[in-house]
Length: 324
Image (cartoon, rainbow, N blue to C red):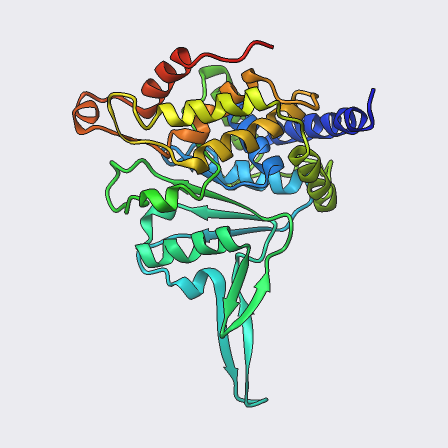
């Protein structure tokens, strides 16, 4: 066993423990938990979509508790200003000087709740912070706390009072994760946990134990970034992204950032599976969440209720994978 394989084995145990702790609070959504953990290891941001009431806030709070990170939340509303996100300068009459009030983005894990309820200027303020990993207030730049990850939730665009994110802003998210209704067994567990001996319906993350530190997450991100990718596997990811630009039924395909996101996420997925190298199956595993928000369907397919996942599934079936 090489030194890197030994490090991956140790990290795998910690990641498995983190997943188990998150699932103690966030029940019945194993795929969602896996994809969020992959994004954290890849150092990327997540767009989490689902109807209200499915536990999106609970998921993010549970993850922050599992690695001991600082949690912050912004409730996006139509009147939210960019300074409410990043912070602003305040004049102190006692000292006759300005002082900086840091915004909620200065955290390890930021929940941007219902991001598509805010106007474009405020959305752009957050997305700029995500891209630059720093905040500039009154000409002074301040780096964000590491690790930094944004999980932005949005209601489906069909809901009233939403502002769809432009394609250029959607491209900033490493993955788009869909959260659906739990099955009946999981819902029974959820209802029991929330109603048994608790007053109200507040989110309870007390059962979640801290199993990693922010410093360990940073080290894990570095290890994931160093995971070996064979040129043929990298070429496979690029061919998938390029196929979205010429497949019938797609009005706009994924750009190079789609290929980059697949490879980044696949590296993290390999570590989660206790491997020091990426396989074609890792690319297939992350392709849909990495690309579903980077393609736009032709109007005739949207009218017929096709989803990006339907077209991406066909592409994955048609693009040949390298032999292992």
